[in-house]
Length: 183
Image 1 (tube, rainbow, N blue to C red):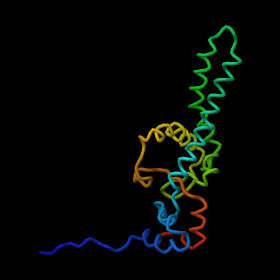
Image 2: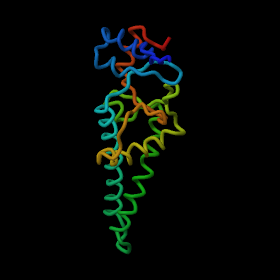
Image 3: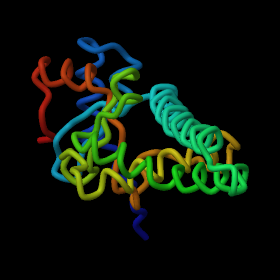
Image 4: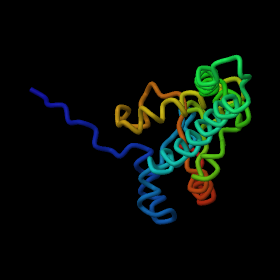
């Protein structure tokens, strides 16, 4: 009767984390991941991701409310300004994220710039691009409410995930230390 011992050799990402911890620090090294093409990156902290989402959410929501207020104050006397303002605000909550997203096709909206993150594709680390940036921003701004309520959770390295936020400065430090790809 033979028993099968599980393979206890460290995985390549674990080895990189161990070696890079001296150059980057333990906390940063623990967030090292690999894209589908084996290129290494440092995943952004949840705090940085939530900050980016919060800034983008507040920007889009503020602009939508501003559009509703502008409609309300300039509506003709023959119409119902409250109804028009509500419709304008709700429509703006859908339209503005697309417009804002298309302005940040490089993966760095205002929230990402302030938090030091970039939204990239999990498969190869490439930028989101203009075609998908509007959808990504719509999900980010509307999804922030879900995150704020605590209904969304789980590991950000989920196999079904298409995009991930990276820590730009830590990833640059990782590459400067000579860690670019998994062996």
